Image (cartoon, rainbow, N blue to C red; front, side):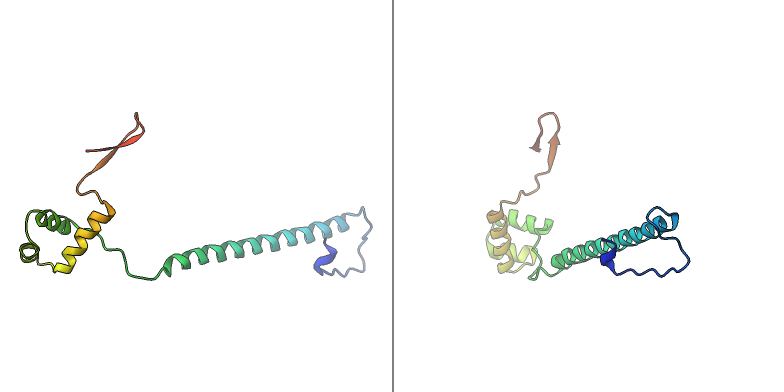
Amino acid sequence: MVEDTGIIIQSEDMDLSDDSDSSDWIIASQLAHLDYLHYLRQKRASKATKKAKYQSMLNTGGRHKRVITPIYKQAYEYLRTHTYSETQLKFHLSKSTLYRIKRQINNKKQPINMPQSYDASRGDLDEQ
């Protein structure tokens, strides 16, 4: 394996027999160098993987998801008992925004002002 790496050591005055200390030192240093190169390759591959994962998260494209804010929740509650025009005037929101809020809440079944707690004894979520 060491011969395949292309490392060349020139030594004219060293004893390079199979059982000499200098031969053991040369082989150990070559193996340490190979371990270091392997470590560098692994580190480079790990960095490339992390960078690719980060880049894939950045380039998702499209618009950010619209969030139901507390004002939108109030407008939705008001809209349940009033007309779109009344709600539009009271909250200064467009009809299209009111349509979107209503559609978003109804389609996604978002809980409105329903805090949850975890009951460890039962192992489930409780709605309060």
